[in-house]
Length: 177
Ligand code: 5GP
Ligand code: MG
Image 1: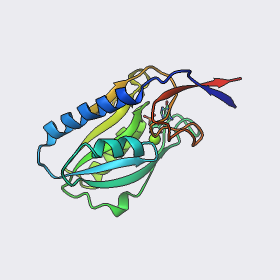
Image 2: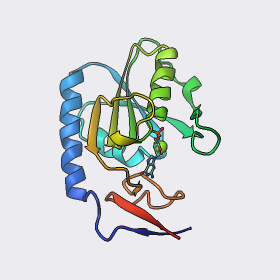
Image 3: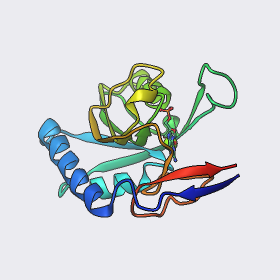
Image 4: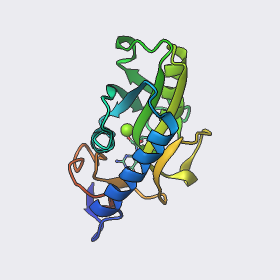
């Protein structure tokens, strides 16, 4: 399908940069000097996580998991497949789970539960974007950058058919018939 990017970004570099700094301040205030394992979801969170983590002077421990949701294709139950969990020792750890965007809430809700199941003592979550109106399972991010409308967005880690993740801004995409 052909598609078109919006003529101007939904979120500019400056707007994102300033919000990421604020989020970092909120996260620092919440955790203080506590030992926290940051867990990012690949691929979407890679740029957001990289920018957020570089706002912290202390050595942060980072890990990545891969989560794929088959909810839309397969069936409405919204199956989430999670890769990499078995390699992490989460017992007793405080975890900050990071993703690009909250949509139906299935991914974050599933992964949070899986982290607790694997022994994490606490799981907080941080997303850059939140499409609140699209929620199908109840999930609230502990830290969120922007609440956005129900629009498909790309850039700053987010893709359309695996492209556009490199764009420094967030853009909306329109599919053309
Ligand atoms: P959820 O499980 O909350 O429905 O979906 C979250 C995942 O769906 C995100 O990690 C992301 O991969 C994908 N997603 C949801 N909305 C968008 C969007 O507007 N643009 C892109 N590129 N991905 C999205
Ligand atoms: Mg994703």
